[in-house]
Length: 285
Image (cartoon, rainbow, N blue to C red; front, side, top):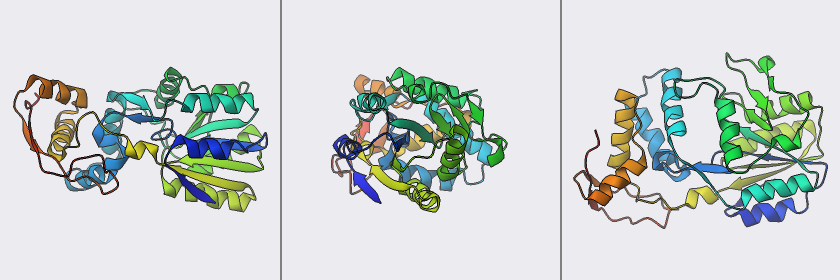
């Protein structure tokens, strides 16, 4: 079964009935943490994909990964909900196992030499400690799953890369010698929930998927602007430099010149103004 929760209340309600035979699996991006940069936010995903298709469709997978990771590590991370670290801690107090299952690759890039260590450190900075659920379990690279940079486990976090999350999760369960009666998987993307659901059916494990969409409704500090983001992406493409939203905000405050118009937001985002507006800030160098 897969349900939708647009606030943390829906997750807490479902986890209240979990017990020691349940494994709770959390996605990371847009579930535990989110990014301040507008281009990376879930509600702007379609815009980002469309721009990439038009401008960098001939780039190699390595180049695309470098671009995406540059945005990721240059952005300010935020908690999706301030109560989430305590919710994770409460699972440990109830002796309910939990783990992070993220699509982040283990492939190093110029901006981050050890993506898994970076991910673990970022989570710990927000008070998340998934190592406590698996205190004696050693780190492992799942070379049997293939790939030059295979999925890996470390400190309660599984990095999957391009390998389906279902395969990585089942590989981890075999490695940890754990077979739960039930898996509760919290992710913001339906395709990942359906993927793990199908694998749980095959393994005869009861499954509850929760599509958690609270991050899709978070309001940015400045309105979404198509031409601003296009400028940021173009500079990143041509110079491998990401200009953060914070720099845009500084120039807005200073009142200098850079003309652009607001894009029409997606229908589900009722908090944004759909009128075409013109805002003046400077063109960043």
